[in-house]
Length: 193
Image (cartoon, rainbow, N blue to C red; front, side):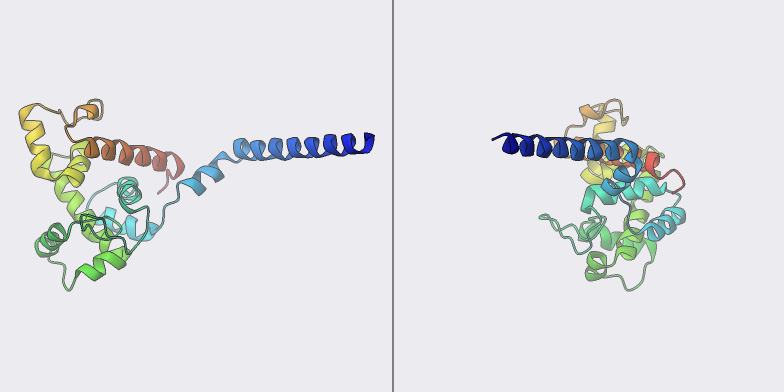
């Protein structure tokens, strides 16, 4: 009976030691854990496209994280394609306006570099359309520029992060909050990106 109790105590101590070691690693190596939880894939493509269109790479990465979590080949229930989840009509409009040649839906869906380039061009167009207001541009990326323009013109929303809870569409409200959460996380974890 004593041996059994001693074995149980030894097992409990060992288990507590493992928990203490795990918690220590979490706190001491929190940067490692954070970068594991919030990775950025396709860094070179993101940097190149962000640079081409005067965007912050952290913002492009945050949109990709919110849209597809870096999974190529994704197609939403509504039909949005690729890493940056552009609707086909929007993507075709971008391809035509930007003069991209030989870009098709299959390339948008499966090629990270194409999706990032087309999505970044579109984000830059929204950024310009909303007078360099990043928050309004991100909202427009989700809800469409017509809806965001209506909200701004009617006074339903002022386009700021402080009043994001006033965005009339719940999906867009949560989308903007999620994108800027990832954006700030990425800026903290990858300052040199």
